[in-house]
Structure formats: structure tokens, C-alpha cells
Amino acid sequence: MKDIYSAVKVTDNVYWVGAIDWTIRDFHGYTTPHGSTYNAYLVMADDITLIDTVKAPFMGEMLARIRSVVEPSKIKYIVSNHSEMDHSGCLPEVIDFIKPQKVFASATGVKTLKELFHDQHEITPVKDGETLNLGNMELTFMETRMIHWPDSMFTYLAKDELLFSQDAFGMHLATLERFADEIPAATLEYEGATYYANIVLPYSAIVLKALEKVAASGIKIKIIAPDHGPIWRKDLGWIIDLYKKWASQKPTAKAVVVYATMWHSTGKMARAISEALAQAGVKVKLLSMNETHRSEVVYEVLDAGALIAGSPTLNNNILPQMADVMTYLKGLKPVNKIGAAFGSYGWSGESVKHLEAMLKEMKVDIVSESIAVKNAPGDDVLKKCHELGKIIATELLKRTTAH
Ligand code: FEO
Image (tube, helix red, strand yellow):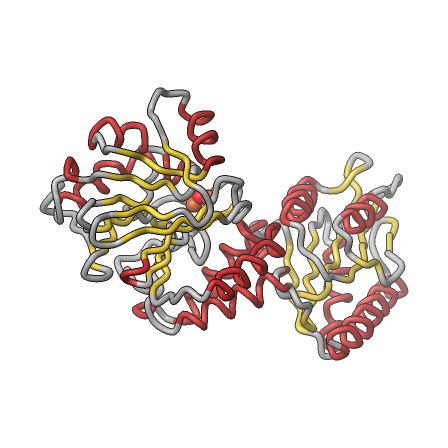
């Protein structure tokens, strides 16, 4: 493996020694059609340090990349910025193999690693702002609790003005290009936003505070090295501004109409609502859950100002595809949306009531009466759906232009 896998030089002192997962397609419910990478970094200081490790099956690939620079046994320290198994899965085995002098994590990281592995490895807790002297350079630890786990922290290498940012600024994208400036901006924006929406979104308020805290600290950052996807070494303001935009969730004149249908009745209603929205000048994403993955819906909801949900009634409830996406969306806590519910039914007709309750639980402001139709919509009901779309569009344009 040593001659196949090599490290990638990031600076004179830092190498990427991670692994590329070309085939992963599911990340706890988030679909990853373009794979991912698990990034680990080698700091070639006097005291050689490994920042993070990789998912368990990729340990050999990481060790081979390390060996292309230095014998792994020369590593003195390991830093675990984040305990989630995609970055710590092989940590116990790596500790046994490398036998570093010390392994560091945040205090919560130490507890989490113990609870995950139930082993006897000693991990040393570090505090926010604490430094680690590596001889000719030093690392500074910065706690970033709940971005996106309680244990999460960043590690800063002042000598290279380099921030090891664990999951933040990452994306699930398997490539042989290691740097963001080697990848088209549209790909970076799409993959970065999808990652943000599916992983980081619930912690947006904390992200905004963390960005302010880093800016206020006055530390200079020339490189951001995340734990997934490419490394940022040019035009960092671009991705930082995108993070500010995604975290602030300012609504735009865009509506997501998400629905599932049995015999096309709810589908016809969705079309009528969407046509009215578009005719009023609102950008519309019409997403049928019979064909769409929940991850794509969350990506579209990220910058939308309206969320309109539709389902027929099945066994006194909503269709399972809608239960799936609504549960997923609720957990990700999007904010600043208006909306309504719609759907068809055969006899009992509870789906619209359920959907409206779910939207309210998500703090979606219901600005139009919801519409339920028995069996199939005729022209009269489709006209009502068109009206619903107009009402939402009027309110959305009022709110987004007032901002
Ligand atoms: Fe990439 Fe939260 O693990």
C-alpha cells in the first residue's frame, strides 16, 4: 500500500494523510451520491502530530499515506478534534499501532471516546484556548461545542495560519483533487450547502457565534483544513461568507412544495399551487417524495422562504414518504419559513391536519388555510390551490422584499 497511497503536501509542515471513500452512499440518512473523504493531517513539527484519524476500514490507507512521509512510530501526539466514528473509528487501533506519547481531545471528547470504545487508552483533555508545544511550533485548541457534537473542537496551527476545522467547512465529495481551488465553484457551493443543510443546520445560531468569536480573536487564517472534502487555501472569504449566509437562513423568494401522491390527486394540487407561485414571481422547487431523497429536500429548504407540504390520507395518517421527510426536516430545525398544507383523501381525511400540525411544530408560519379534497380535485379545487399559491407568494414577496 505504501507505494500506492501517498500524502499530499498542504504546507511545508502539514500533509494530508486521509482516505477517500468512493462508494459511501448513506451517511446516517443523508444520501452521499458523490462519496466522501475522511481527512487526517500530519503536522511535521519537532514533535510530529497526527490530527484526527479515519473511519475504521480505511486505517491501512491512512497509515500508507503517513508512511510516504514518515514512519508512523515517529508520531508523538494524536489530536482528536471530533469523536464521531468517521474520524475516530480506527483511533484505538491506531493508538495501539503507533503508541504515541499522548492523545488529546476536548474534555467532552475524552468522555465520548470512552463511551464509544470502552477501552483503557488514556486520552488527555484539553481546554478552550490551551496550547500544545510541538518544539518548533505550537497548536491551539478551540472548543466548538455543538458544531456539530458536544465534543467538537478546532485546532489552530499558528505557524502556518492553518485551522483544522473538523466537520465545519467540509463536504461529502470524493475527489483526487485535494484543494477547493481545483474544483468548480458550483460543485463546491452545491456540495457545501448540501452538507451544511443535512449536518450543521440545527446548530446555525452556534455557527454564527463561533464565526464571530474567531473573527474577534484576531487569529489569521490562510488555510482551512476540514475533515471531509477539499482543503480551502484561496479566497477563504468565499466559503466563510457562504457559511454566514447558510447559518443566518434569511428567507428568499423561493418556495419548496414537497408532497407525495397515491393516485395523482395530491400531485395535481401541488402543480396548481406551484404554477401560481411561479406566476407571481416566486422561484419554486416542486419535489415529489415518490422520487426525491430527503437530503435534496433539505438542500432546497435551506434558502427557501416557504415550505408547502402535501399528502393524501393513508390509514388515518400521511403517506410514509412524507412522514420520513417531515421528521427529518423537523430535526434539522430550519427557521424563517411560511407555509401551508394540502392533500386528498378517500373517506377520513386526517393528512392535512397532521401536516399542518407538523409544520407548526417546525415553527412554520401558516399563512393560508390548508386545503383537503375528497377523492380527486376538480377545477374548483384546483382553482383554490392556485389561490393558495397566490396567497403564499404575496406574503413571501412582502416578507422577503421588506428584509
Ligand atoms: Fe464527519 Fe461528525 O463526523
